[in-house]
Image (cartoon, rainbow, N blue to C red; front, side):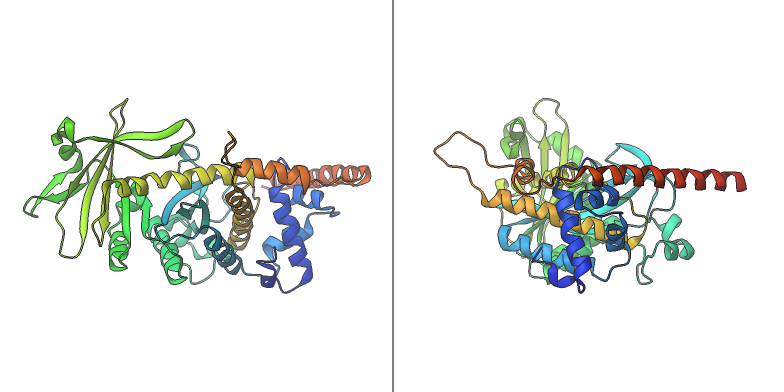
Length: 411
């Protein structure tokens, strides 16, 4: 917490922020303001709620501190920035950015919010370093009254998910974050603005595209679908490579690459991945200002899974999706503090290396959190405090139920 203490002018929010992050790291079943306040010994959740809603501090400044701390520990010149979005399932229509939309979290269209995130992936480890909340155009950005009610700043305008990724990549570039590559799924690979921006900055990319994507081959005037190109590749041209370690061993696929038409001083390829069992194909457009071997492109392509694993870790270990806030400020503050908690676990896991002479795996984020709770964060609460919170919860729920019934009767 000393890394971010200067972002909190007053002592109360500074202390509450520390208790909040400890609560996110704790074994509390739900990481809401109520449960975190009870664990911290507060009589009610007002201090925790005030921290997220009205206390004076900048979530973006804390995010920058988290990013700088992670770069100090994980920084590498060949690092990869991975961009992806994740959904947060919600009920009701008041939470900022919520609407019925597709989310990979549920695998279908659900009432949800969508956040776009940027992950830093290096040989030393991986972590989230930035976030943006996606605001749908019609149901939110075209309704000023709704934006004002959710506390969205006046300067915020509609931006597509690739545009939000461009904002985060630009911020990382301007901050001097060391990286050489960017990767993302088809949502980002299909955006010409993102690709052009990366090429302008001389940043290499390996971006997934759909099977109907067309690329220039031969004389530069012929456009061919990538799935048609895959059918023309002889069997002997497919090479077996691993794109990184998985839960059950190396992620091995068959790979092929085709040089597409380029201009002087740049290099473009179509990278194709084939599943050895099912034959399923995946396609990537690749660009680099310098010649690159195949195994490097494969490594970058495999880095995209890191951000999906970070979503699972963030939601499972520090309650990334446990928030119960509706406004713009509250969402960014909760997500930023969750990123800080995840950074603590990531850095601890990174700095603890196993003895090479013993048959043991390295400490995982989950195991670090388990040890933290066993030796550091365990807090014994007196019975009176536990009973007080039981009474407080039931009283608050009774008031909420009464108000709900009164609103229904009034309608």
